Length: 579
Image 1 (cartoon, rainbow, N blue to C red):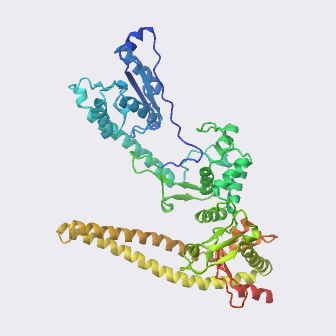
Image 2: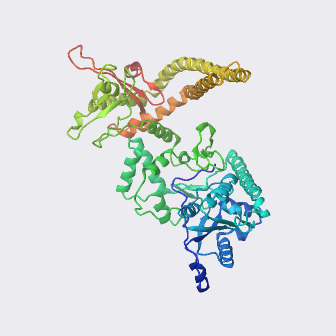
Image 3: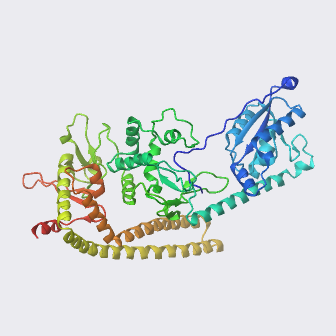
């Protein structure tokens, strides 16, 4: 449930080899070529739970386990004692580097005996622990000893061996109980807004007044802001990473180490090497807007530790919990840009309109086309549908320079009207948006009510078909088919309901959106040319009509959908100039 920082990974602890011996052990070492595996394990949860309860057990430490197992091996003249260590790994899973290394040696026939302090050190999954003790180890002729539990597979008739299964179950119960308590504590903390992650992300540092609070690290924050700016200009994570490396900007791990801050990462070979995934993580990290986001990930159970992304509706967001580096407005725009990922050309060239241009008829994207032999004036955009199937859509083709000229001309008109006739523009657009909003809300609310009603009907149909199946009216095959159909329909409807609710919320914020758009236009009032950043900030999409050649000349119209407010009618601009 805890969230992790993008620049922190869990490193596997080293697995030690043959334990040190003295002269009196030489005879024992010559007895056989097989080793005695001394397996030591300690989980983070074990240490935390003991400290929390004020009863920390020193014998549980890795060092004490090593001493104890070595003494036991020597006292019982067990040959070639070799350590296999997992420090900081849970016993509920066997995907541990030390254990897997030991298992490889067992399967290679190199191990004669395995010794642990007790059964719980081997593991806390009763089913798998039993499988290894009763099947895997005997299969390879391996003797297993749990010292404190007096368990030894060489004596199958021992009373202690008889109750090993019960002890394994109690060990599993302990792990489940500990996990349940940790989850409950984290849930309570997360619900009341306490930050669950202990890792301070790149761009922030611990506040000198309170180590639990984040303060802006100005130097790193400049890089974070630059990464968002580059994305707004149309560059993708791989391009941004390459640019930062070229400019010799320290990556997050190297930067923290240069600042003398602790990080579990090893010192990178190339401290200027930025990974694409790191840049992508920064671009998607909502905490840069000054909020705390809890429950971003979840795990299915204590057995399955894989972190899965939680849907946004299951996350808890608390705003204004620390200073913002990126405005929420810019962050939202970047997420939108990230969803419109466009393919890169084979030449490596890019165009600021890539991902923003659509066919006015089929509504599919127009692909940016260029070659190394093209001059800038020869680059063009073409309908993706037409390019793959000429019968499905006509050739919506437009040269990139023409597109840029038309869009820039229209944006200049909008800037001129907003800056000189702001009150008029606001009143005209408010009326337009109100009319549009009323119609849109009516349609979407009607569809939302229909979808929610159908979801309720499907719930009743589930119950009815189940009862008919139990009573024999519907056979199992028919029931399975109907159940699958109902489940898929309900899943699709629930996704549609979420989408409709988002559209309705957006429509209900039209006045706020209009004001935000006006402020964006004002910020760009001094523009002398169209920049990628300004284009992405103001424009959501450009729709290109098929060319009209009826007059003997090629004429082509475009329609610009502005971010937040949609299309701006021509009369809104022309009437303002005539007023």
